[in-house]
Image 1 (cartoon, rainbow, N blue to C red):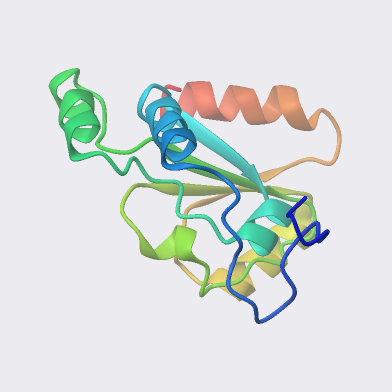
Image 2 (cartoon, rainbow, N blue to C red):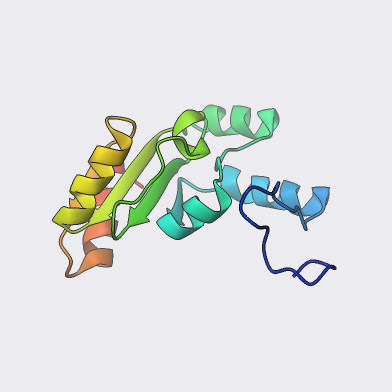
Length: 140
């Protein structure tokens, strides 16, 4: 909550940053230390994140360790309502959309075109299937 009592910014307002430089650096460090960043579609719509490793030094260290420069960015959606203009799709690094169910997969593909690869999951056993796909196909 911000000092003025708001829980979030209103549509059309610039995002209110409630964290310090130290906090943002800590988040960047976490991003640099993982192979995958998972974000729900609701967070994607609300926050419009890039999910990058901002530090050039950390990106260089990832490459030296034979990792990709950026973690794989995975979005999970239950309805496919994703914005093709979202920052996630237009910044560095690879993305993957995990759509739960056929209808969500169709809508995501219509909304996003060929922007990211898309994996459709059955509406049952979502997480075991998603983790299997990430492990088997993406080695994460």
